[in-house]
Length: 201
Image (cartoon, one colour):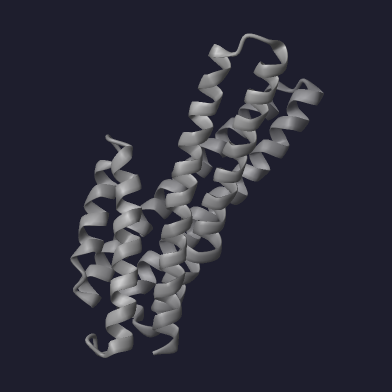
């Protein structure tokens, strides 16, 4: 039971961090938009730097959400119910972690390529970025399956709706934000039901 609670709590934390990350990202965008209305070089620099810093924090929080909480959450539940959760866990590990590693390598290679003025290395780096993006999409699919499995196992419809909204977010980005809000609420609901004994595990 402990590993289930731990997994659900990690999911709740991941969802909360994703929510905060998106909010900060929006703040960063509006802050950078303010550069257009700045009337002095100092104001432009200050606004621009502030926007970039906020955006950097948002990205870091998103990474923490995925790699420190979301992926481990699925891993915890996979230990409990491997038939249901091992597939999304593996997809997220391969996709998100593999994608991140490839993108980091690509960025380093791109820096070296630019300094060396090597066109082939630049193309290779861009290829790695594309491959990293494909892996990240695989991780996203794992995330999607994870939500649907959570709904199936815990009978919590908020996860089902979150999964559907996650799909829609491919076309309407804002629904992804709503999906994480629902995932946070769903995780909190499941946690309370497990502790109270409403859900038998």
